[in-house]
Image (tube, rainbow, N blue to C red; front, side, top):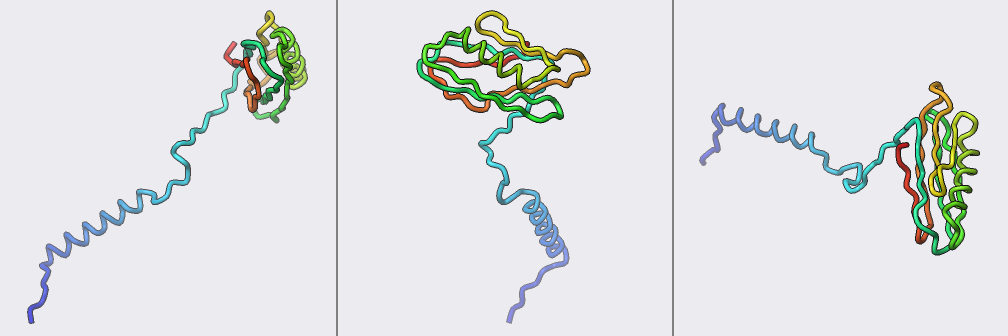
Length: 147
């Protein structure tokens, strides 16, 4: 009966190859924890922001925003929008709600009929993040940008 023989050099080669494959297999995750199609948008903190109201609403709706000071608690507020409401009225309502959410450490100003700006009252006040979390608007939009 014939036996199957390995030379010592071939056994070392096979063990080395198996070791390399085991290390490579452990390095590649079998199942990804995160969905590759999901992007995480970082929160941006700035000393000042500008919100611009664009267009005219074609239906009743709302938009919800969150004001968050750096290392502070987020404050959520909602603005109601009526069909054919003028941008000046929407800006006025946005100014009122953002002023209440921001408090005394931040200046909230209306600039014309379509822009609301917010900035820190002094250098010691923390920077803020401002985001739109929900909007149910038809015919109009909001733009948040650096001041």
